[in-house]
Image: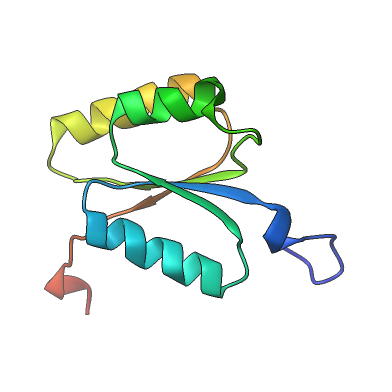
Amino acid sequence: MDDNEDFDRAKMHLAILHNVPSQREFYKLALQRAGFKQVSVYAAALDALEQHINGSQERPVDLMLYGILLDSDMSWKNLRQIRNQYDGPILIVTERYDKQVE
């Protein structure tokens, strides 16, 4: 994003979907420190997402952060369902660490 673009982090609404509560709080704190004021956190479950997307929030989500378990079929299934219900950007994060990448 160019510095000249009109970008107000405080007005953006972000949603974090992650199954690990400590990770949800970590991402929320990091994003709030970066200037994002409207950050909602949920377990990475479809019912939480459906509740959020179907009007429990006044403002639609501008960006979704989704914590995925790479070797979990359910995580991938949930991601496909999320994509069916939400057409905005999704940032996918994982906890996997690969020593071969060093």
